Length: 221
Image (cartoon, rainbow, N blue to C red; front, side):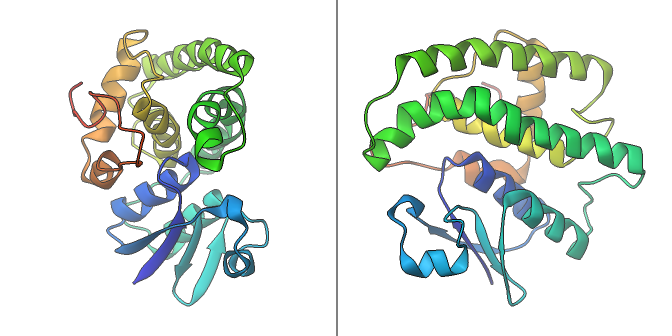
């Protein structure tokens, strides 16, 4: 069985978990307190980051590289389109959420409110929290614009771009930091994607000392 070293609220780990579940690949989850820099973990990934996936005799790191490895080795159901221009759009949006959204929103809300407490690295920076709360409005509006032109974020079928976005938003939804009433199209999209069987384990996550929002696991909000 595959083994994933992860942190429950990490959007990068959640993206990998969603891909594994969608592909129906059984995986053992091992929570890794990567900030403690355990020597055994650093041997698996010298970068000291999660996720790390042990599968097929390989030890893989970096969430996007892991997801594309899974896509290439287990092609069904497909999460990447066949046409180059469509694959580009998926990768562009994955980069948007894993880089821009992560920098402007996730790191300023989730990391300030939760990670600092868990890692015991200080108190939330109110300036960062305010900046994240402002920035997420722009991103929700951009998602709504995309969904006004497409059935899913990158096109007419669900792709890895949707899982990347849902991974970040689900982690933020755990701590009630998403205004789902701002854009009905985004709310409908998220309700649709979190109703998939692949999302069940994500919605069952519980972080000790930090209970999820009341609507977190409710499929129709």
